[in-house]
Picture 1: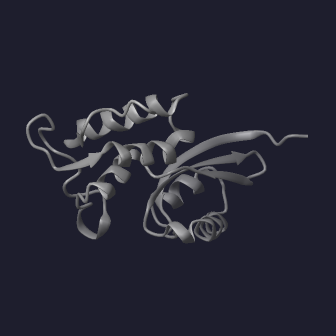
Picture 2: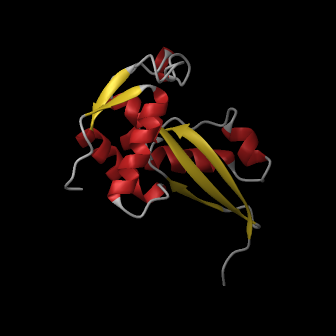
Length: 157
C-alpha cells in the first residue's frame, strides 16, 4: 500500500553542504520532517557534487517520513561555469548574476558544443522532447543572461 503524501518541498542547496539553518530547517520543520536525518542523507548523496547548487524536490508523507529527488544544477549556473563568469563572493549567487543589458553588454561566450553538453545533462529536467529543442532553450537562457552563443546552430543535431 502506498504512503499518503502530505506535501512537496522544493529547495536549492549546495551539494554536500546541507545544514539545519535557514532555509532548510524552517522548510522541513514546518512539515514535521527530521531535519538532521535529511541533512545527513543529502550530504551523503551529494559528496561528489560538493559546492554545486542542486535543486531538490522533497516528498513528505503523512507519517513524517520523506523521499527526495536530486536534479541537475540550473542551466544559468552551468552557463556561468562554462563561460567563466564569476559567481560572486564565495561562489554565492550574489554579484554579477547576468548582464544588466543583455542585448548590449555581453558578459561571456559559449560554443554550440558547450550548449549541447549542458542540454544533454539537463535533458531529464527540461520540458523538451528532442535535443534540438533543449539546445534552443539553453541558448535562449544564455542570450537572456548576456552570454553570446558563437557560430550557427549545428545542422547535424
